[in-house]
Length: 273
Ligand code: KIV
Image (cartoon, rainbow, N blue to C red):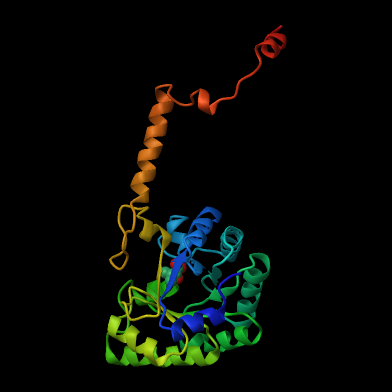
């Protein structure tokens, strides 16, 4: 049984923190699901960490559907949320079409979209038609060229606007709100004012939950963003393992009898006769 929207409300009411992690493939989803992470986000950050782009903008809906379907197949318990990619929800009809593909073809349980008051009507429409929507405020990566990659809403006017947007998204039916690169004090205040859970990334400890990108958390690349904590050095571990494998092949140490299968000597003789 997967995590439900009701479970999330209950977690917030009970003061239980909510961990969320990105996942982009079957193997990652299996590992995170086994580790008990209740929310898996198939983020369009896959454009950067899986495809090597500089931003999330080149990610297509086809990309999202393919990766999201793999994550759904790899998980049993987590609620799987997929990002609606750049410009796939610029109008309500496009948003419905994109959400339809993610929910019917990939079978995710919810979608996430970025933005404040200008997406409120889209959120309302999707929710009224049975699409659970996670909202996303603060630094919204699809607007990177407009916003710049920096902490948002540090000035009073922008902070006020963010609080108003958060309340409007909640009123429109969003089931949770991601707050990215927002001052900790502001994120904590938004968290207090909302009934739905807030999930922070670079937004301090006062949010109801936290989200991290798989590669940052596990140390797959040489560096991670400042807001990330590296819980392992998997990139270095992979590199060492692959180097050892290549050396073993080079030196004739792999494969050994243990990794090989034998053929009956008579059968071999007959085959060679
Ligand atoms: O795409 C993504 O991974 C995200 C998270 C950083 C929240 O939107």
